[in-house]
Image (cartoon, rainbow, N blue to C red; front, side, top):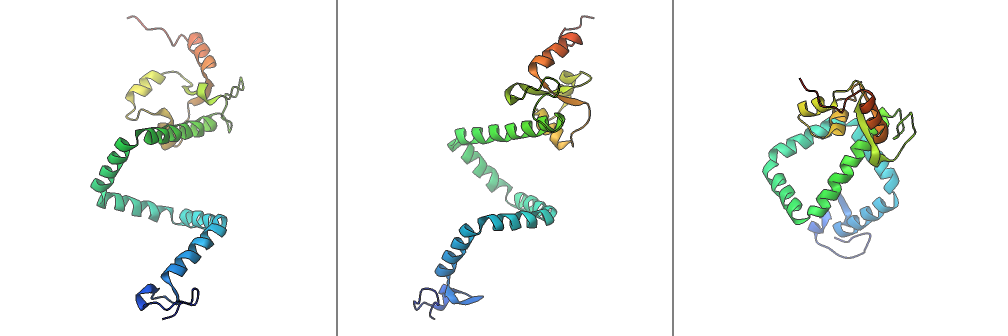
Length: 181
């Protein structure tokens, strides 16, 4: 058979069954070129497709994980041991992303404390409006408050505070003293 793109004579196994006039190599090059030149529209349509099929994609992902759990765990451990700095950077980035998302939600759409306007994420934190944050933290199974808040649909009773205002609040509410019975 002759390829209509490159003009070379090739064997029948060098062609896909659904595409008889273009060989596999030429079709691969054409698909790669198309994906690079139409990347934005392809990504947009892929995101739209995912939004319409989100539950079935998640179900397929969970099923795949159940069927390949051991292999995936071994690969993950191997990756963690061979590239610990990459894994640590990825985890730090993901945690920071959760923190920014949660602080923005509780900061009324801004990643800043509403009252004083402080917006440096390094010194912003979540505060329990009615106190009791230490007891809540100890009772949580998760150790990341930002992830816990996002996974629990942003419950009421929390606010974004800068650390300076948080220490002032602790002093004013007498939250930082140990109680002696």
